[in-house]
Image 1 (cartoon, rainbow, N blue to C red):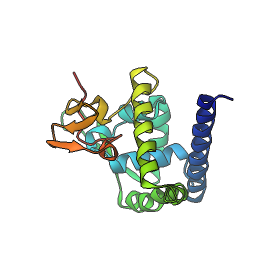
Image 2: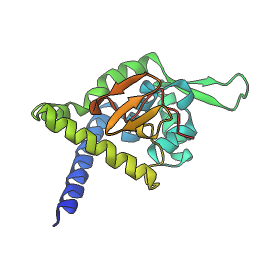
Image 3: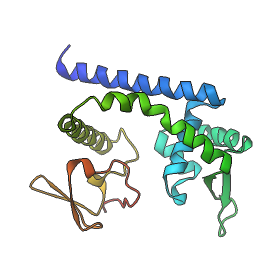
Length: 189
């Protein structure tokens, strides 16, 4: 195997680890991994983004798949709907009180990975993060990843001679400050 193939295999193994950790939490709480991902997404994003269409794009699945998962989460009182005042058919999702408690528990599902990351030097982590951000950006440009809210694709981002700068924050960014999912993201025109 060449180095590229070995890296791809390594990334596949990491993906399997995350799937396994998600399934573990899903079994404990009687919900599916995609339902956990939906809860985590809703907990960490603006209300405007927490709708069926956006979540389907986010996870690269169909709207009916997300609708079915959301219906179950609503029936279990983990999510609620906030209907639009201008269009009664449109709604955003938000966590219920029970949903918030569940999210507090399930956010720890990545702790085994975090534990292993703590064993890596800060310099190596910065290199890893820089390279992951670059790969994600390239996959977005090639159309493989549909949704990207990284600094690299944001209208506020500028890079000059290897220096990252955010015009919104009016600040230079270190490599580790470049975001992969920025709440203030606005796409470049």
